[in-house]
Length: 244
Length: 244
Image 1 (cartoon, each protein chain N blue to C red):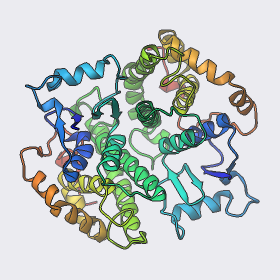
Image 2: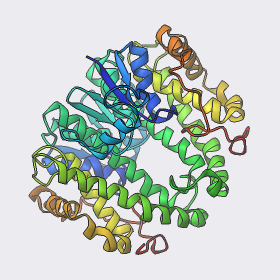
Image 3: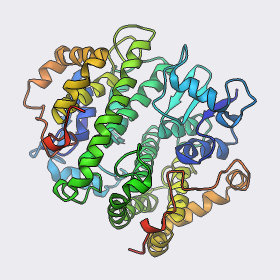
C-alpha cells in the first residue's frame, strides 16, 4: 500500500528526514504536497489535514506521514516510523530504542541549526534578527557543532558491530539522518566544516557511504531531491560562517 | 524489575517528563542521580554513563532511562517508553503514534521555552543575552504560546472519545506532558498565562485533572517533586513576562 508524505513542496526542510528514508527503502510513497493533480494533494490537501479532518488529529506542523488509518507527525517520529516499517531500522529492542533516540537528537540539532538564523523567532525575517544571529552562530560553530559531531563520531567508533554505522550492523534511518546533517552543515557552514570535518573521519566516511548507496544516489541525482536554499533549515549566509 | 531514571538531581528540567510518567504509573523506579549511596548512583554514576560504558551507547544528554539492557534517551522517547511500558499510553496503533507525536511536540515546546531565556546559546548566562531574550520573549508570548495552547485545546476538543484527554479514552503520558507545560508556563509567565489561560478551558481542566490523580497528587506533595527554579527550563524572570 502506498504511504503518503506531506511537506512543504519547495524546500528540503524537515521533510527531508522521512523522505530520505522512504527513498533509501525504495518505498512506494507519494509526496503529496507536490502532487497538484492528485485528490487530496497539493498545498491545499496538506493544509486541510493541518486544519484537522474527520478521523485524523491535526499535526502541529509538517512533515507528517499518512499510512492508511495511521497519521505520524514530527520529523523524527516520521523517519522512525518509515525506517521501522520498511526495514531500515535495527530489529533488536535495545538497538531500536537507541536508533529512536539518535533520530530525536538529530532533529534537535536541526532545530539548533534553524535557530542560528532565527534566534529571536520564526515570525521575523533573518534580516530583522541579524545581530542576534551573529552571536548565536559563533556559539553554534564553536561549541555545538563540535559537540554533536563528536557524539556521532564516538557512536560509530564504539558501536560493537564495527561496521561503520551509528547503531546495529546495517545502515539505518539513523545514518540517513546524519548524512542529511553533514550535507546541510557543509552547505550552510562551508568554512567551519572545512576546518573541523577532518576531526570526525568516521562521520565523513559514513556520509560518503550513504551518498553512494544505489537508491540514495539515484534519488540525489533526481529532480525529487531539491537543492539546499536560504528558505530551508540549513542556510548559506556567509556572515554566519567562519573557520572558528 | 526496577527501572532507573537518570537526570540532574537539583532541577525538574527535562527529566520531569519521564519522571511524571513513572510516578503516575506507580512504577518501581530509582532516581539514580539523587541516590549517592547506591552503586552506580549519584552524579558520578550518571556521568559515567554519559561518557559511555561497555554495553551502552552514550546518550547525548540526560534524561535517560535504563531498563535492563535497554537504554532510552531523550525526554520525549523516555516518557513514551515509560508510558507504553507501564500502561499510561493508548494501545491502539493509530493512537499510539499520535501520542508519540504529541510527546515530541511537547518536548519541542520545552526547547522553545528554554530558548526564550537562552536565545544565543547554552554556553552563556541569561545575563549575557538579555537584550536577545527580551525580543524572543515577546515573540514567544505573542505568537508561540497561543499557537501551542490552541493546538492542545483543539486536540482535546476534537478527540472522538470526548473524555477530556489529548488522545485515546484514558489519561496518558501525553496528558502528563501537557500538565508539566501548563505548570511551567504558569510559573515562568504568570502575567501572560493569567491573560490567556481562559481561552483554553479544556487545557486548564485537563491540567487540573492530572494534578488531582491520586498518584500524581501524592508525588506533587512529596519531596521528590522539586520546585520550579531559575535553574530549570521554565524560569520566572519578570522582565520576560507581560500580559501581552
